Amino acid sequence: MEFGFLDIIKVLGALGFFIYGMKVMSEGIQKAAGDQLKNVLGTMTNNRYMGVLSGFLITALVQSSSATTVMTVSFVNAGLLTLIQSAGIMMGANIGTTITAWLVSAFGFKVKIVSLALPIFAVAFPMMFVRKGNYRFWAEFLIGFALLFMGLDFLKSSVPDIKHNPDILYFLQSFADWGYGSYLIFIFIGTLLTIVVQSSSASMTITLVLVAKGWITFDVAAAMVLGENVGTTITAELASIVGNVHAKRSARIHSMFNIIGVTWMLLVFPFFLQLVNYVCVGMGFFPPLETGTGAEISSMTPEAARMRESSVTFGLSIFHTLFNLMNVIVLIGFAHKLAELAERLIKPKDDDDEKFSLEYIGSGVMASVELSLLEAKKEISNFGLVISKMGKEMASLLTEKDATKLKKRIKKIKKQEDNSDQLELEVGQYLVRLSEAELTEKSSILIRTMLSMINDLERSADVIYQMANTFNRKSDAKIWFTPSQREKLVELFNKVQEGIDHMQVILDGDYARADLKKALEIEQEINDMRTKFRKQHLKSIEAGDYNIKAGLVYVDLISSAEKLGDHIYDVVRATKGEV
Image (cartoon, rainbow, N blue to C red):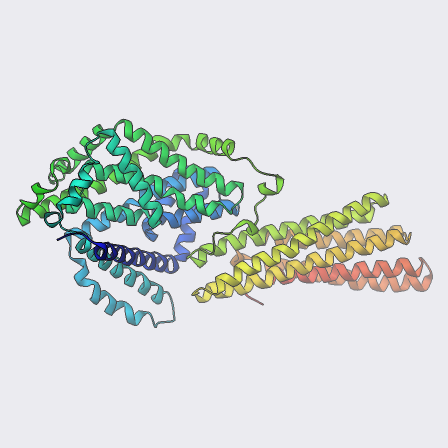
């Protein structure tokens, strides 16, 4: 029997089945555990060691280091994480991804979990139709779990038997007798395989199947695992291509961490394999380095073959975990150095590249809507800062006497207003893409809330720019305010700025804890000032205290300030879902 084209197609199909199952399982758990992932994310801001723990927990939960690393790059890009924090998370993700190998070794080879696939489908299928809660997302997770192990079973059966395909074994063994040269070759093969399948878990599973079948020796399989650790960095690098300089640096830290780890491991590779050998023997397994391949396996009894299979698969899982764990221990103290090196390697193109902006995100919406909403929330907070800067710049026009400087300030406000238009467009499009995913009721309400907020923020920018243009007309017409008018406008502008500052506190914090009472008080005070100043204005006009042109400009600014206060309050009110 020869291994032909149809057999290759079967292997590829089985691999696709496995990867699809992993994708469904990972996306299901991310959707179901969205709030828990937020809580884990909150620990990332503490220190690099908590970052390692967070990266491990998230990766172990979602069963995808690629999802964790892309998520981390996205958060660094949006300013949610610093480079040092991201370094710890990337390190933790490397440990977390080893859980997959343990699951596959324990259930895929030792336990016939594929026989439970249909019962799992039977349990999960009715849950798909439950609209309340997260039942349908847990159903996706269970279905993905069943598909994953069905794919693994297909993969194991589609990889040819050694006894009937000796030519392939001889071909592989011809590359396995060159000492360190062989290790380098199989590190490259592991790297290439992971780049092609875009999943270190999938390539690790392929390696487990090959070593279990006896196609490659244990030491060669371990070399492939090292290559897979390098290959998995390509996902974060690809995600960072369209990101800002901070995202690129975060991805580069991940690459350097894995490449440095593989480099030092090569220096101690034979000794480390012996360590793994001793650990396996201590756990009651055969020594994996002495399990052999080819004819030796073919002549084994079924019981001996099963014990050998357990030995090499668990041994490879131990190697994978120990390597990543020791790499973290070795390099965690150098996180600052890795960040500094990444900063030296990747320089910003210009000042704008140093700014955090959602417009740089091009890697698409993440599977977890809840986590993506954190990015949107951060961007809305930045939007609020733009409004605050515009408000302060506009208020300064009141005391600017130099016409040239005044026009320069107005030009700056115009540029900020253009930026606000772009921000509304970018954040709005991002939220609309999120709304197309399957949402919980809580996420759906939050998306509507955010869409309302960015609309009012953009209108606030429009009002501020209109007020700036009013000052421009005043300057061109050589109109001057009386001291009393200036004092009243200063008082009103200060109150509006107080409202903007309160809004910013709310945008930076937890929407659920927004203080509507204080926001309403500020908005009411602005309304009262508008009414009071307008009445005083009418009396002043009747008394002839100032000319009608100055009065018209004065009233225009008062009305615009009151309108700005309304939009600011609407932003705060939207945090309670009142849209």
